[in-house]
Picture 1 (cartoon, rainbow, N blue to C red):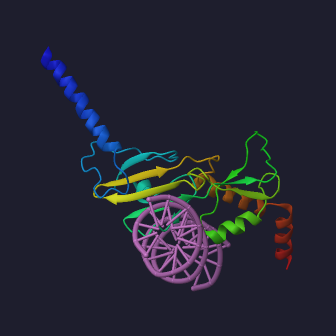
Picture 2 (tube, chains in turn brown, red, orange):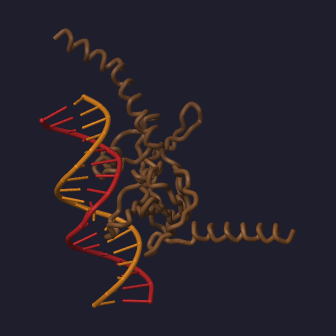
Picture 3 (cartoon, helix red, strand yellow):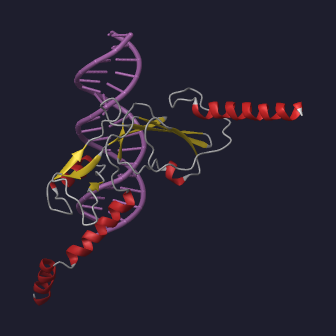
Length: 199
DNA sequence: GACTGATGCGGGTTAGAG
DNA sequence: CTCTAACCCGCATCAGTC
């Protein structure tokens, strides 16, 4: 019986040491855990001070994806990729859609595209758009770090997002195509089309 | 093929801490 | 002065759209 108890203690210790190895590292460590028994599922919305170890086969991890709008930041370290959060684009009128939802647009990653985006109007009420910047990391944007090491991709997030979630990349793209379809069938564009056809 | 935007890289600056 | 972190800028590449 004692043997069985010992075994379970051993198992617990194994688990504990494995857990330690899985969580005690820091992205800046010279050596990262080598023996990772289980990799994490890709986290679309990593928040607060979390760490994940993904498989190097994971396509989302390979592309350093996140549903938060993250822009590349130079940390002068080619081994570690650093990204900082751009926040979320909200309606300046704080309007709501018919089903009671708020407008939380995905900020464009490219600086130029973002400036252009802020000149556009709210897709719901035509009001001005406002960029709500992220200040969840001591007043600075939340930062994400990615590091490829052997068969694993190590991910670390610093800071807790202090703003709502923007649309995901897929949602933003879908909205763009819907908008395109709408403008294509709007009375003005149909009229223009007819004029062009007559010409 | 031009254009736009996402993504990554790296040179450089600035501010605060030690 | 050095180190670190945040940020700006330009450049390159790639994918999707027109």
